[in-house]
Image (cartoon, rainbow, N blue to C red; front, top):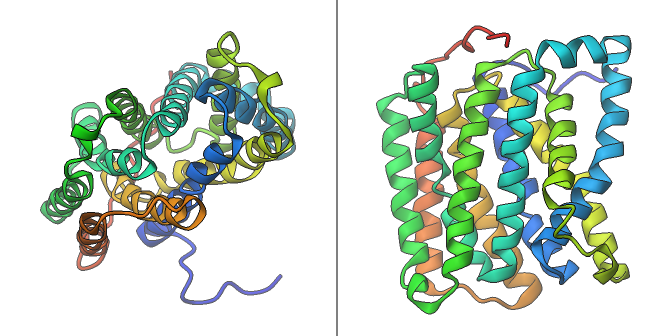
Length: 300
């Protein structure tokens, strides 16, 4: 087996930050795939979950083998809860993208650090360093610059759905952090199942053409599961607030994808805000940050 290059971390906080950045970058492709599907949000979420379900349960079976049932029963309650939160977050985000500008939605999504830091503080009593709070403040400032006057231009429904998406995501970060030993592959598999159940009555799969089917296949079987696995694993090595600091990576990347694929040219404020966001993230994840051990596993 080839040795891992020395500049790639294999454990600790640096690995958590790398996984968080990778996961958020992969999630940013959703904005393109959702637009390519060109159907309502419930249908996109349903088909994405439908593609993801057999893939992730196959991985879970291969990974856990005969222990799958035991591990599922061990973490049944948090698995169901995180699956529901993931389904809400996914469906709200996908629907928001279909109702308003991509840049507007992902800018709001970038506010996730504040939700994650607050929920982790309340639920886990997890300390958030002053450096991280300053980085969060900087990221939020950049996001406010990006949003600018777009709220007044319409798309209020999409904006509210985006807020719902980051609220559920922030709660999930806390759940993942609270249960560092909960099998990550089961988290992703449960999210897929819950998404299918949540959207089944609202979806219309027959409205998808060939390109729509391919777009939802890419979301459900490749990019979505990989991104979720990266982010859930990241919380084993870094705090919820630090992991959520990387949501602005999605904000900037998704805005760029929308520009390149759909000619949604960002305003000058978007560029300025993006620079502020990236600077805040860089500040938050560099410097003399203290390594924090994961909180003890809580079995329920």
